[in-house]
Image (cartoon, rainbow, N blue to C red; front, side):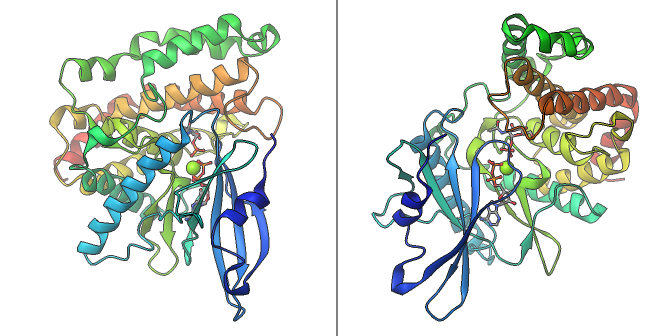
Length: 373
Ligand code: ADP
Ligand code: GN1
Ligand code: MG
């Protein structure tokens, strides 16, 4: 990939103003999609300021200008809401730094799209739940996020990835990947492919309820994994929701489910020892309580009843996406080793199988949490 990072940096008012200097630029974070860099700058009085610079992945996000329109619109909306509630809008939401020309992003001479967010200081990001309070807070934060956006003018949002959580459509993509992908890779993943194909009848459960008008369409985040949230260093509470690229109309169950998929697993998303991967029911319960608290009574009975299905389908869907990408040559998710996407698919399917075993317990936990017990 050809890109012009220095040209991009120069487009933003972050280093040369009043003779400040750029001290360091390093790759940052563990996102699978965009290229993220941490910029450390020295101000003339020798203080350090930090910025997050991102090259948006325009193979995946086909229309970065529209994507940025969403991000700016959403962050300005959140800023106003946080300010009116007496919060700190510089820390509790992302803020887009404009270029020197006053634009929300910069396109470099190779055609890449770049954006900058001021770095949110005195915060930390987790790849794994470290204590149960974190995960409870994460549930409250994602529930509350959805509630904050309940009156957002949804008709103004662009669909940044079409059919993002449309599981039947993901299943069709997966079938195509099995048919047209590398045969040697399919041979390596025979049992995983069979596992995925066996569950076709689950794929349309949520989209079916949506089509029948039994589930409401809401403004949802759609990528609610634990590392898309920052926690406050001092209070240790959830502070700011990140990665706003996939905010679109969706189901609450997508946000709930994706958080469970990642955060309530006992193993990492790419753990190779599958004995270490299962659904932690305690974490499931804690997140459920937090999410219901954050949604503050806004979920319908059907949404509540479908929470376990949200968890299972988001996990399954992510599994077929990883496996489909493995079969077709790893063009979507960044990989850091051979068979990385296959390993990721395996953990997702192990979790799905474990959820199927624990189905009655998951339902009982949801019922108990919803009745406030
Ligand atoms: P991707 O879309 O590739 O997942 P993210 O937007 O999630 O990229 O950013 C990757 C990581 O960068 C996050 O997990 C977080 O650790 C860090 N990060 C992103 N924005 C900020 C910010 N404004 N302040 C501090 N850290 C941030
Ligand atoms: C990607 O960008 P990141 O790493 O937060 C992906 C999600 C997947 C996730 C799996 C735009 O999220 O849908 O659930 O990887 N984002 C996109 O870890 O496809
Ligand atoms: Mg991310």
